[in-house]
Length: 309
Image (cartoon, rainbow, N blue to C red; front, side, top):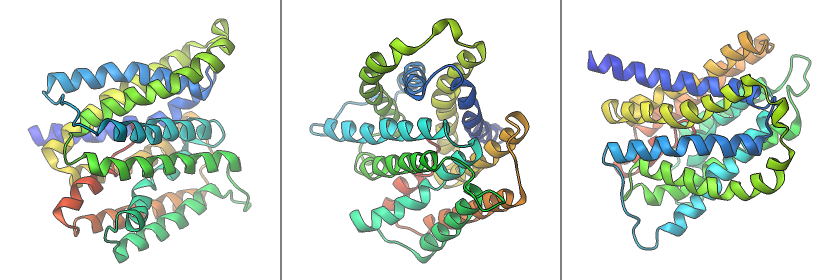
């Protein structure tokens, strides 16, 4: 019975994460991307630190490691959320979710050149297959881009941020647990975004015109998207193991596509549906290869498959 509830927790976490791509659209009706990032982090940080304290996962920084936390936080959440939030304001929720889902495919490629990590044939095959699926998703049935080209590029900027973050996180995961890293990267990222919010966006917010739906959307993004969902998912990793838990992460783009279709009335032509299936096939192929890697490599490569905070 306990295992069933753990699986349900992991599934719920990924379903809620998939919904965040749709919920963002409602937040964006009243707030610009920087304000959304600021508020989302402001709400989620207390959840993450409370969970770390309650579960006994708070740690101390080792000498010389704080600079790596700063650099990691610059990549994510700062660059990642910057690209994702501005990108989501220009492209559909489905396109955004599909592009973000390719993060686990690009990390091994970058790690091959920077860290000399082993790159398997299935890694390359998974990347090529999923990238072909991404092309199908972002192209409309008439052969045109299914979204603003700047929005698509910004989503790939988010992927770049996540890849840079993961490469740096590799050196930290041998000494720190995931919840501690996430809590501090959120806090430092919040410090990066605060001056921009206070000087550029706060003065422009028309609070009288703010919609109630946008307020609820911000609460959802902060409480669920960056707080409760991560707690549910880390519980699943502890009980099921990272490899099994991360299989459920493939639900994120599927949920985003389904909810977008029913709630936002996004078009779902056959090519987009096939493209989603192709992307997921490439992801599954790539994740399958991770079980064949060395034990010390498995720990951080399973980490990269986790949905973003």
